[in-house]
Image (cartoon, rainbow, N blue to C red):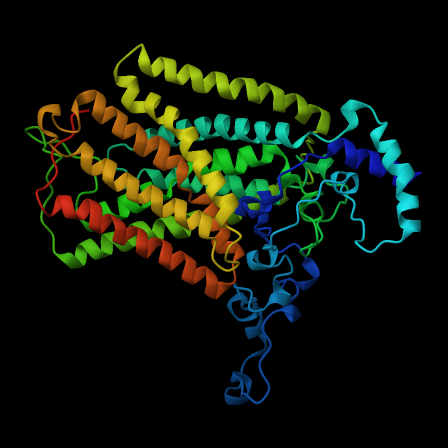
Length: 500
C-alpha cells in the first residue's frame, strides 16, 4: 500500500524534463559541503584528522614536548582541504557527468521507472496493469508534458534574469560611494549570487516535497536521464530559474574580467573621497609603473575569486543552520500554480520593458536599467542552451560555462570600445542613444550571459587539479581577450569620454 502511495506521489510531482537538463552545472554540481559527518575530520573528533605516515620521525621523537601541546588547535585541527575522495563523500563534478542518453518515450520512462531491455513476458505482464492504471489516471495527476516543462523553464529564466540583472545594478549603485574600500563594484553582486546559489544547493527544506527520500544518495550514471534527476529538486523549473536565472544573472564574469583589465591598465574608476578646489577630471589617472598595475590586477582577481568561493560555502552553512528551525516547503501543487503565474509575469515584464525602452518616462532610464533588462533574458537563454549542449562534452572541463564566459567577455570588450570611440558622424559611442544601448548590452546581455556563481560552484565541485586548470585558463584567457580588444584601442588611439 505504501509503495502505491509513493508511486502516486512521484507521478504527481514529476516533470517531463528534457534529457539534456543534466548538463547544467547548477544542477549537476555536488553539494558544497561534506554532509557525511562520520567521515568528516573535526576538532571534536581529531582521530579523523591528520595521521603521521609510518617511517617518519615526528617532533615527539626529536623534542621532549609538553603534554598540553595537544590542546593547541593549530596542532590538533584537521586539514582544511580534503586530501582524498574518502574525505569528500558527496563526490566530484566529473562523477556527475553522464554519457548521452537514449531518448525513450515509453510509459515506464515517463513514470521514472526502468524496464530491463531483455525483460521476459512475466515482466511485461506485471507492469501492464500499472500502465493501464497510469493511462486511466486523472489528467491533473500526470507529469507535466515536455512542451510545457520547457515553456515553464524558459519563462522562469526570463523572469529571474530580469530580477537578477536589476539586483546586480542596484548593488553596484549601492556599493559605489566616496571612500569605498573595494573599488570594483561588481564584487558584491558576485558575492551575493554565489551565497544564494550555495544556500539553494544545500537547502533540504524548501523543496523537500520533491525529495521522496530524506537523504540524498550519491547517484551514479544510469541508463535513462530520468533515473539520474527524477528525485532531485534541481530539475523543476523554479529551481532552474532561481539558480541559472537569478543567481547567474546577479553575478557577472565578464564584468569581473573587465574590472581586472581596467586595474591592469590603470583605468579602473575609483570613487573620489577627498575635496578639491576645482572639478577633478576622472578620465585621467596618475601614472604608475607596471609593478603596481600587476598588483592591482592580482587584487581584483584574488578578492573576487576568494570571496565568491567563501560566499558559496557560507550560503551552504546558512542552509544547514536554519534547517532545524525553519521548515518551509514548496508543495508540487503550489509549484504548478507558480509556474503559470511566473510564465505570465515573465513575458509581460519583458514586453513591458521593451515598450518602456521605446517610450521611456525619463530618457536616462534607458542607460541605467531599461536596455539592460531588455537584453538580459537573451543573454541568460544563450548561456542556458550553450550549457545544455556543451557542458557534458568534457567531464573535467565545463566547456559550456567556459565558452559563454569568454564569449560574453569578448563581446563586452567590443561594446566598451565602441562606447568610448568616435564613430564619425554618429559621435562618440553613437550618440546618447547608441551609448545607452551599448551600456545595456554590457550590463544586460553580457552580464546575464556570463556567470561567477556557477563558475565557483564548478571550481568547488571539480577535483583539485581540474579546478586549478579550469579556473586558471578561464581567468587567463579572459584577461588575454580584453588585452587584445580593449587594450588595442586604449594603447593605440586612446578612449574618448562616453556620451551617456
